Amino acid sequence: MATLSQPPKARDLSALRIDETARNGKGFSWLRWVFVVLGALLFISGVVYTIRHRAPTVEVVAAHTVTAQTRAALLNASGYVTPRRRATVAAKITARVEQVLTDEGMHVQAGQVLATLDASDAQRRFTSARADREATFAQLADLRVNLVNAEKQLVRTKGLFSTGVTSQEALDRDQTAVDSLRARITSTEEQVRAADARIQIAQQDIDNCIVRAPFTGIVVSKDAQRGEMVSPISAGGGFTRTGIATLVDMNSLEIEVDVNESYIARVKEAQPVTAVLDAYPDWQIPAKVRTVIPTADRQKATVKVRITFDKLDPRILPDMGVKVTFLGDERPAQQQSAAVLVPTEAVRSEDNKQVVFVYRDGRIERRAVRTGNTRDTGIEILAGVRDGDQVVVKGLEGLHDGDSVDIKR
Image (cartoon, rainbow, N blue to C red; front, side, top):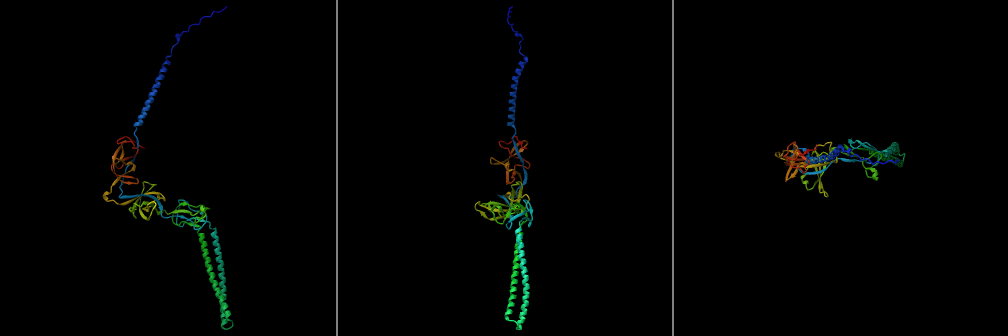
C-alpha cells in the first residue's frame, strides 16, 4: 500500500540567539587596539622629548696653579736625541764568526769581549812563524861555535906568521874566515829579529779574532750571527757583514735640532733650553746649548744646534723625538707671578677676546681670561680662572653660557 509523503515540518527560529559574550569580546578587541596605538604614540613622544631635552655631555679638566716661567721663550724647534759616542764595532780582519756574546740592551764595559772569530788560520801562521824563528836561531848557535874555532885558528896563524913559518896568504885566509863568520852571525841575528816580528804579526792576527768593546755603553743593535762572515770592508756583497754590534755611550746623549737660519741669531752657547720628549709630553727637561755647528744646510736653510741635558735620565733613549724651547734672559722680579695652567684647547677666541667655559653646579659658565705664555703642556691663565676650576675642553659645540650639561665620566 502506497505511503503518502507528508510535507516537511517548518523550522522553529525562536531558539536562535546571539551570544552576548561573543558580542562583548569583539568590541573589546577593537578598543584594545586603539589603546595600544595611543600608548605607542605616547611612548615615542616621551622618548623624543627626553632626547631633545637631555643635557649634552662635555669633558672637563681641572686647572692647576704653576709658577710662571721666569724666562721668555724665544724660539721653538724639534729634533732627536742623539749620542756623541756611537759606534758600529767591526772586526779588523775578514773571518767567520764563532761566537756572539752580546744581545740588544746589554750593558758592556770597555774592553769586554763582544764576539770571537775563527782563528784557525791565524794560529797556523803563528806556529809557522815560531818554527822559522827556532830554525834560524839554531843556525845562529852553529855559526857562533864556528866563529870561536876560526878565531883560535887566526891566533895561531898570526903566531906562526910572526916567526916566518907561515905565509901572508894563510894569514889572510884565516882572517877572512873569521870576518865571514861574524858577518853571517850578524845576518842571522837580523833574521831572528825578523822572525820575531812575524811571530808578533801572527799573534796580532790571533788577537784580532777577539772583538772587544771600545768604550762602556749599551748594545743597541746585534748586526752579526754565528757562522756569518765579517769583514772591515764590504767584500762579498750582501753575504758579508761589516759590523758585529752597534754600541752607544748613554752618558753622551744630547739633542740635535735644526734651526732656521733666519732665527739662528737668537741662539748662543750655554743658552738655557727646555726640552720635552714626545714620549713624555708632561715632563720638562732642563738643558742648555752646547754648540752651534758653524755651517748651514743650503738645501734646508737650517743650522744644526747641539744641546746637552743638565741631568741624564734612564727614560731618555737614543733617536727619541724631542721638542725644545730656547729661553731668553730672566724676567725682572716684579714680572714673576703665579699662573693657572689649562689645556690649550680649553681657550677659545670670541669677539676678539680669550674665553674659557667653566663647569659649575651642572651648568657651564663663560669667562673672559687673560692668557700668558704657551707651554708644551698647556697655556698660562693669569686672570679669570682659579686653581681647581673645571674648564671644558670638549663638547661645547652649539652650547651657550648657562646651559645645563653633564660631565663625561
